[in-house]
Length: 219
Image (tube, rainbow, N blue to C red; front, side):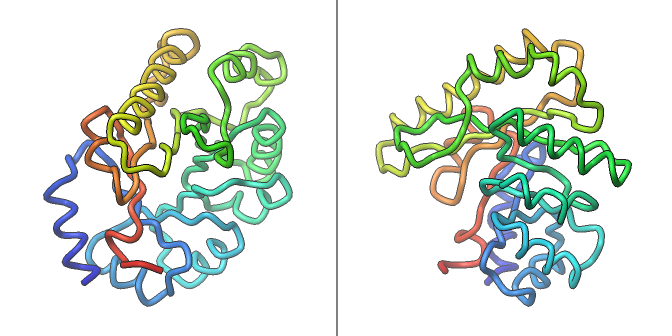
């Protein structure tokens, strides 16, 4: 089933869009099947689970940390995590920079924005991001590279609302690119869209979709 679902997704998702297979709570055996089918990008939302899986799976897997990240957990994955999606504070950026420096890496990250109506979602707003990117403290960070933005739409069946939320994230991306990353080719990623709305997200301009249940089945 996993191989079949990946095959179907690849017919729907343009080559320009990165498919991140969300493997949180899934066993090593399921990830190995997806890997054998050619999947290389996997997303986890808990650092400890990702560390344990990375130790048992091939080293060319690109691990994405897509959950809310606590500063005290950064050190455990600093040596191997491919992309950290959920950066929502200067404090967290500073810790990522500190731990990346220790292992002589430049760590790629995305800034997470609160685009949903639910208060439970994490993320910056545009003015907070502008303040962060304008700060002297940010200028000092030599071991992080901001590659784009991430957001999660509201959990709703209202397609118009989801569409508006995705459009809002695109507007934020465009504004930040114009203000802070005009000559930076690495600022190119828009991580939005999950199993229920990835097609809509892609139509709005997503470059990365995070798909779990559509590949691995329900929890």
